[in-house]
Image (cartoon, rainbow, N blue to C red):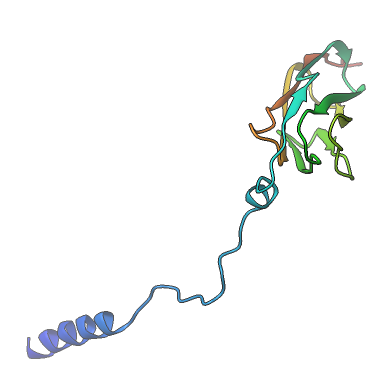
Length: 147
């Protein structure tokens, strides 16, 4: 009993004396979106949804979503991500100057994706308000099995 009390008190003292909080002297890293939006501009989305209609499984759909920099500063698109690996977006490599058009190119591979397709593309930029999500949709007709 005496040993058990000693063990409990020792563990309590040990826990109180240890500061398990992380002590990091480095400044916290800021996210890309916060860095990019520190000098905002505005954007007009020309194409926000592309309906590719009905295609056959295995077809590849390519489309370029158009947008225009309506602000007074260059529009920096830092990232473009799709909701799944079958859709690959390509962002502009250079900033879009005020008044100029830009494109987010997207390729959708319908292989093994029969049925209704609803894919979203999230764009990170220095636009305020934020760049809205872009959508790719349509129907993929499945391959018929051959016996």
